[in-house]
Length: 82
Length: 344
Image: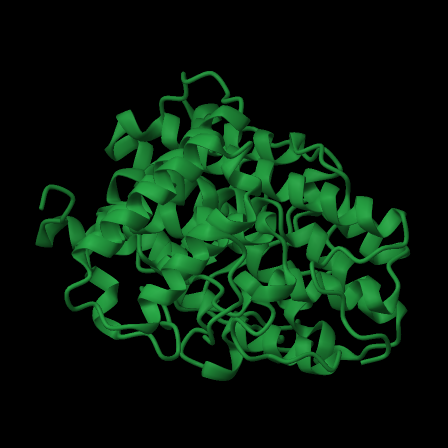
């Protein structure tokens, strides 16, 4: 299949990644823990999580979609970099 | 599920057939096909037609949990499939006529996601979630759950049909979302199971299909739309757009739904379903917009129009259903065809 990664490419593909969502949260996918400043695990219900970036979520550190109501805007990081 | 009560000539004929075996019924299925075609041609609106929506719901049910007492060989009976296609053609035409699509100029996954978020935000139907949060009576909360039970007791199943029709990035995205819908390997966390728990908390029957007789055509149409999009490979763009629209209109409304149940004194056991969706769908909407819908359009650009169609149809039918339900409630009447017994 055309979208299968070659073994070489597969090694370079990040195992864990943070997706920076335009106008939205940080989507974190991979092998990680969410912990307090003293290292205690915070309650977590799913493998892939969305972390609040706008500051207005009612369930921080997780996103609850409030960014859409407050008109939170970000630059597209990939476009800014170029 | 159990057989519902028929609502007109097509469902009467269909249920008689289903209760008998499929052997030697080619003539009868042909007669029913003609009857269904005539009904589709003469109805004011397939989306609102009680008889046609119920017949379609039961034809689809053969592909899900089945109808108790109906021979399982009916599922792929060519005569029945032809009848379903007659009704589907009319239904799809009505849905396409009911929506207005955005400009078809999005070229990459970020812009597809952005257009879909825009569609979801512009959804200007009456706010069921604000009403549930602030005003709905206990009886109205129970009716609200009964409407939702038609889909939510098999939540995620219609979209799962799409998985083998996708490849690469959109497939991985769909599977990631669906795995979460199905509890991530924990059966007690499946969204359909959480919804059943909420129903029990309000002393409702949580058996799948128990309330089919009680709900109007529009409630059935909302689920039939997903089954039609999911079961027809050519509509894979529409089922993907549908899921994206559902995920994008979920987090905040579910927070408000939970508030409505808390206002009536219900505990976390009852609101778990809604609380779960606040967090889950804030994740899912990002994946559904960019990787699923956007990824599908990047892989198959010709599907852009159907992705928007699926999203717009999801929003349009649910806006109609909310308007109809709330119009009944505003006049102090039940939104159900068969009101719940008082105090039951």
